[in-house]
Length: 166
Image (cartoon, rainbow, N blue to C red; front, side, top):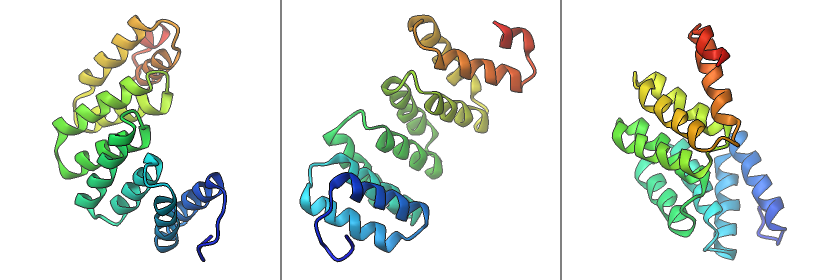
């Protein structure tokens, strides 16, 4: 794959994720570039490139790649989440909250997404913002269990046992 030989896309994506996890960024970039050359309209490759650039602290380039990914698929969670983390790292908390709102709206049934948003709120002394978002989800989408689980975990952690029981 690193020599430019054709491999199935799912295999390439798995290799990219593995290379990123192992911090083999040069190999990951080679694989991402091969994927983009083959399929430049695939938002996943742009999002992965954004993640790689974010790891390398190339924030402007990372933002550009995340935005390219979102222009191709406005609900792509890794790009939405990556952009939120980038804005948070830059200290642009209003933009990070706006992105996290989009992440929550795109995956209201995802425990990791809601937990990420809650962690953001706790780190920035704005837990009321995210609790309101999660409670709104809980009330409006009664078929979802994730909001209730995240709220219960939050209240359990803060030792508010009556709220956790609810």
